[in-house]
Image (tube, rainbow, N blue to C red; front, side):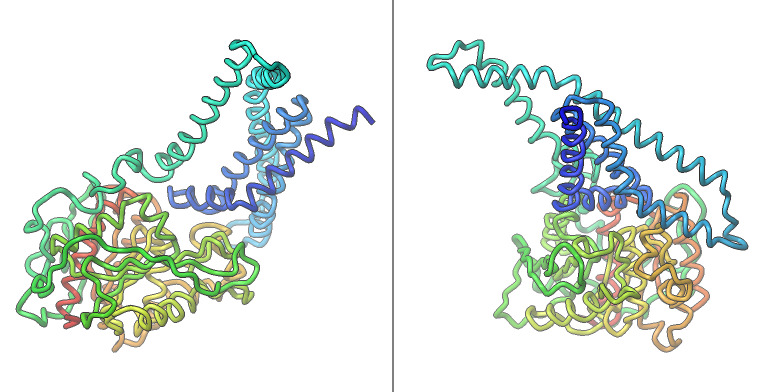
Length: 524
């Protein structure tokens, strides 16, 4: 019985760590951060599962001081977390035919062996770290016990526990900051509360950033695309936006506001069953000068499927919007952030899932829009609404505008992809992996099916770094399709690849292009 005790402790502690990572959303948050950093969903799941397995092994070592069993416990946690993804990928490989290749049993065995070795190494790394600090923790615990038992403890008794407390406090303070530096950019914590020096609002005179209603700027182009960044030249738009409807390129300057915007978080009934919450939070930014009792109405920019907190931590978007509006570079605008992070699917694809458990498409294009229009002073028409997003959100921006052109008149995808499920196995799950469902949800397919008379009413601003693998070719191919099918669009050649830095740098030009389009279509 005594020999079984360490085994039982290892199993229980490792299980508690794994369940805590799931229940607190830490595992999902890590997956989401990795996806935003550029990993596809399956690789993100692999990395986060290895991390949780290592932490579980370390915790088991601290509790039971049994390195071998703790390593195996960490491996078991890794297998439990990554196992479903591995089984899904195995099923996809078994079903592959034709141009997708065919199942390779030897390669499958090698993959299984490699994953097992990675799980063991992750667990061993956690054990090694825990073994190095365990003696100090034990000694500190003994010192605390002796200090409590002694009415007048010697200073030497409290010195080690105090040092331990300081170290733990430093870890509590610095580990989240380090996470922000890795997840977003190294200057993420330097810029909060002020316009980032290289970010959403460049520190340049506003006169140099007027909306491009005249000749195109070097980086934002209509018609022939300027090659403003290294890499292949992207195609040109054969159908530029309609001519300007107003002689004034910036009519909003007549009522230029100043000050700070406000962000309100609203909880709506969740568009899913089986998620971690029964409500979905949407963050609503109202611009400087917004008066709910006033008569002025505002265009609305929607973002999906990432929360306001995530965007603001990564890009200081709230400060940037304030500055863009205060300087008159864009009109005062309401911005709505719709999050799908608490739903049952790690990668929601902003879709109505085929199994009926999640309805993100309906929630974004109907529920959220109807709520905002009924509770805020909006210009409640498609030509005054835009939708944007980065990575998966870029896909969402494209597909939702194409599916609902009478809701969203402008689509602004940052480093998007244009085939449903292109981000890995998890991104195919909302569609059940069904080829017909994936095709029906792919912008490259839907764009060819939209009636010709509706295409001219939909404006797209496509942002990508042309030479970047995957995202560059995705944008180039999509722009060629837009040209062939008569869609008005502009292409913005980003200077940096997929990631939050790209959003920070290109956001002003993208919103200025949208502002110019708002004037051109008479939304003001």
